[in-house]
Length: 128
Image 1: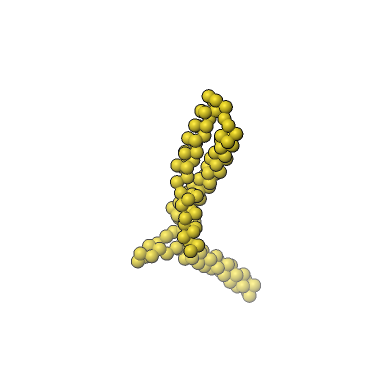
Image 2 (image 1 turned 135 degrees about the horizontal axis):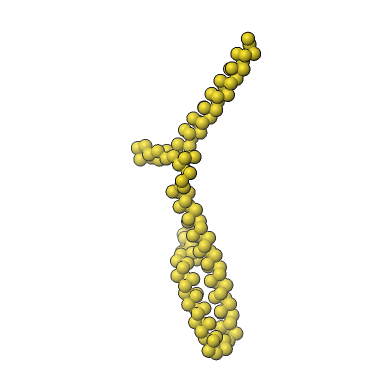
C-alpha cells in the first residue's frame, strides 16, 4: 500500500523534471511577452511569480537528483585510485567478491609480522 503510494508520488513529482521546467519556462516567456505589450492583471502577476518560484525549486530538485545519480555512478564505476586502494573486484563463478577483506588481512599480517620480528629481536638482545 505504502509502496504504491510512494511510487505514484515519485512519478507525479520527480519524473521528467526537465520537461516540467521547460514547460514552466515557456509559460514564463508567454507571461513576459504579454507584460511587454500590455499590463498584467493581479492574477497574472501572481502566476508569473509562482512560475518563477516553481522553476527555481524544480531546478534545485533536478540538480540534486542529477548529483545523486552522478555520485552513485561514480561509486559504482570507481575512479583511478579505487582499484589501487580498496575495491579490487574478483569475479568467481558469477558472484562478485570484494577483495577488501583479503587485502586488509594481508596488510595486517605483514604489520603483525614486522612487529613480531622486532619484538623477538629485542627479546633476544635482552636475554643475552
